[in-house]
Length: 103
Image 1 (spheres, rainbow, N blue to C red):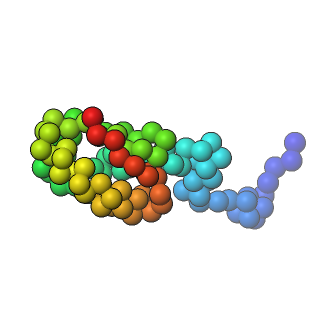
Image 2: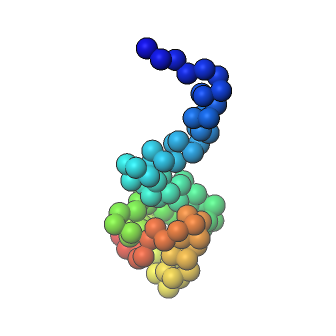
């Protein structure tokens, strides 16, 4: 059995973050992680009033699904749909949503 000496081991060493990133990409989980980051940052992106009225939020097939407990809030967000899409994609630093469906 061959063992690596310290010098050889250092040549093959990679930062843990880089390895995790490659693993996420290999299993196509990097986009799912971005989606979860967006959901977690919903209040930060949209403010407390919108977050308080949001009962359910998730992303599937590049569509952001929102269930709100206020029809007035739903109408307001519907009119600002393109701005929300832009904000979410800017936050994610890539296009992860293309449309929003309100429930």
